Length: 185
Image (tube, rainbow, N blue to C red):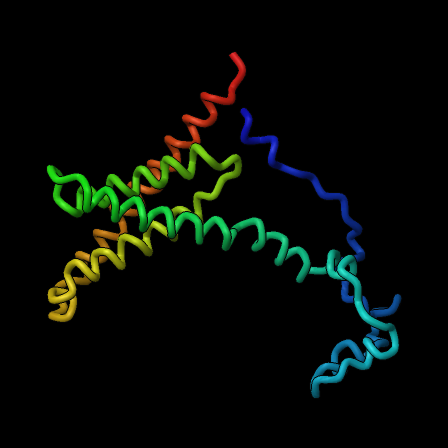
């Protein structure tokens, strides 16, 4: 399984998770970290100097930002959104035999396939959110009159769901295609 190579193990000190302002008895001894930034001045920064990039790695905030940073990539979302809109527009407008909504779904499927075949990392969450957004906006703008009358909400949900399903299916098949191309025989 090639997917398991992206997993990492982390060795960290358990005491780094504790509040650094507590002394050995559990009493807070450094009040500047809690109250120094209330009025825009950091007392600890004046005493200790500027903080470096390596200072923010140990606590719970560092762990949360590490997990959220690996969960959602803004660059991958933006690329997915742009490719989905472009492919949906091209497939919906230039395939004369199919209706616009079917052509748009084929464009979303093609964009997902291209992203899956071109990316070495997994970006399922970004693909789902971008294709949901694209499908919802497309359904909203295609049925604007029905939406204003109040009947369009189920149509928007159906369009967003179908778009997300097509995008994820295309992304899955694109990743499978990439895996088949890069796998040694």
